[in-house]
Length: 315
Image (tube, rainbow, N blue to C red; front, side, top):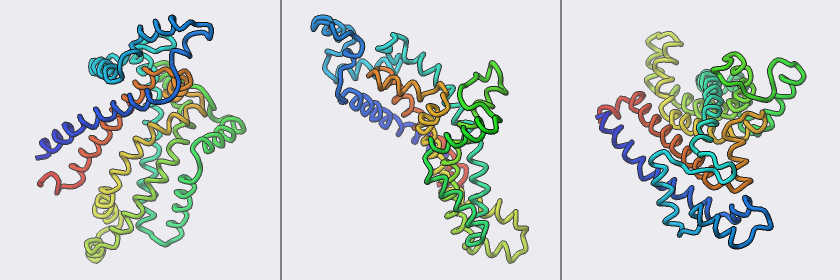
């Protein structure tokens, strides 16, 4: 049953992916401005402009442009950049590992902190521990990520000189330098993620702690760590698992701003440069790849539900 449910979720993602590709194509092409105008000098004649538009296929009807683009994308061909004529798949392939490494480190920092603090806040609802953790979560949600990044860069990198403030080093070149350059941007990204997870887990844990089976476990004299870990946390984590998937998708988008703050050469600079130059193939490729990753995260969340909730496996 679990395999059948997983296959059904995977099949249902296909129309969502098609819809996402259509939205990406429509949004990019319906925005004002002509990308050819950014590529040619102001002295270019109408004939030269028309020739370039024909060469790029921009003179075709939009439905045909979409079919050509999505058909090539299905074979891994996302086209060529209007600005530097490089394959879009290569540009994304060079930047994607940087962004994914940033998101990975951020989630590694955020999830354990959120699970521990959220569990404690819900288990000790109304106490000083709960209030202190709630203040942290509220500040993490209220403060913009770029502002947190600037504060960390100033105090940790500039004043204390403990970590580098900008730049990136590939993992295969120097793993230690890779980690040193990612700690500050990943910590910045993790604060907002952990704050939302704490808020959701606290509410879910507080509700679970009031259930009858928790009181029964306490009456039987079970150790408190066993009650929290085996009985309370697993049931409280089920509704939070969806939020975890959403936060991972949010991290992929939030990484764009954080990368600009810390000069990390990931999706951030690629998206900003492509948007400024109206580089349509790059923008479309980035949006499509992001949509694929978002659908992949949702699929993993569905599989996680199968593991956490036995009722779904036996349904």
